Amino acid sequence: MENDLILLGHGSGGKLSHQLLDSLIIPALSSTLPAGQNDAALLEVSGARLAFTTDSYVVDPIFFPGGNIGDLAVNGTVNDLAMMGARPLFLSVGLILEEGFSQADLSRILASMRSAADAAGIAIVTGDTKVVPKGKADRIFINTSGIGVLEHGLRIDGAAGRVGDKVIVNGSIGDHGIAVLSAREGLEIDSGIKSDSAALNGLVGELLALGTGLHALRDPTRGGVATTLKEIALQSGVTIMLHEESLPVNAGVRGVCAILGLDPLYVANEGKLLALVAPERAEEALEIMRRHPLGAGAAVIGELVENSAGRVMMETSVGGVRGVEMLAGEQLPRIC
Image (cartoon, rainbow, N blue to C red):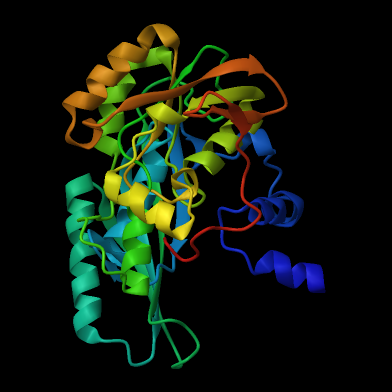
């Protein structure tokens, strides 16, 4: 029982949460193997290729610099569809409200959800609302599920990485997690750090022009860049080499991480994607990203260097090499 309590006490994104999924939840509910676990399920329906995904949001606080739990929920689900190369179509919304929750706050959250959905071109078509007694929840939890369509024949998959591929990120990392932490803890930080929460389907739509040169997409949310790349390395059976000096980190985020002993590699993002691109198409991918408002800070941060059981290494700024692993838990719980 003690082990169960420890395991279930960690937020999604940590090593123990992945063990819980792989050893209990997924085997109990599905036959999906680890290599097939991506940001959305791919479904074939009457000749159409569809993507289907769901996620739940328990962020604390519910309002933070750059967004709130509402637009975060919409953008997060849109992005999970986009990471499969799908065009988002329809969204469901489930609300769990604590008795006494502010109607003004709810109205503000709902308005931001509608605005985010309209901006992403996805329609909210169904939903559900439940109210639980005071003290039985924490103000508001939101579940969103999304359906999108793949209008191409490409395979964009965490298991499709190939030795030689370049790893590209579309901008600075760690902004969302530090913005939420700052709001939660009341940190007096005059650095203008805001969440990067944004819908990435427009950017992905342009990256699809790379055709078969685009191998994988993933948004590094809970667990950050490090955990996401470790997942891809395991799926693809490769070693990924990162370059510390190439990692784009805003000065404010870097400063807060240094003060609090956090590693930006493990801090959550909500408007960033990681793309695995064939080496001969990497410059083209950078050009496409940098022309888009959400990709102006795009950078190559590493490459797939060899086949292996699934490792992530990092060439440090002082010339050494260290391993990058999933954390046993999560640096910042309840950030999405």
